[in-house]
Length: 196
Image 1 (tube, rainbow, N blue to C red):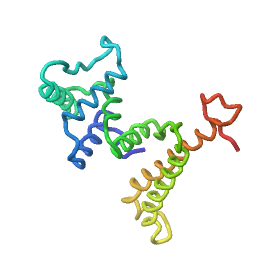
Image 2 (image 1 turned 180 degrees about the vertical axis):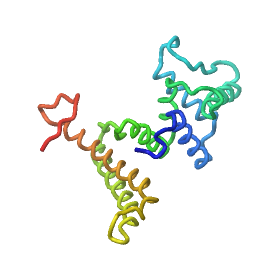
Image 3 (image 1 turned 180 degrees about the horizontal axis):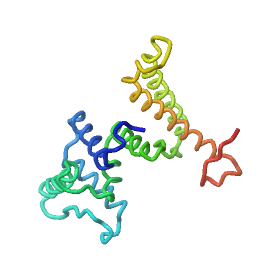
Image 4 (image 1 turned 60 degrees about the vertical axis):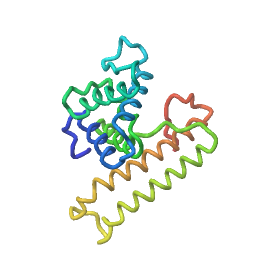
């Protein structure tokens, strides 16, 4: 469980959005808000069900600025962050911020965030290459902990990073397990079966 497991979910999302904006200067508030608006409108297509009302029509640059102001008042905590917008904000984050945020939010439920396996040409190769990449990153995070031959309290400062990397490996394994399970003739594709 994350050390910050007592903070509100909205604060988790805010932290990952802020990490993104601090680290990636190519992401602008206007473009991010526009991406959030698009995802939100796709996911909540009935306008009567929307609790966040983005600006539309008129001068494009003014609409972008107004939507950025609307969204970032929520991100900065000046206005309550409604649960209905969380999904769009998280999905609008570029990688690796999106995966990091999804992992942390899933972890609050005691779950791992694992993407649904792609069903496109070469997706199996892509999934395996992701597994190898994540495994390498996990081993790199664990190696300093094993420098003295034992994992103990002296390694506590490395634990959070190591656990994050291990969870990334587990999520990739689940993707591959799903892909393999889905080809079994007795599987209807609606659930995972543990095959031993």
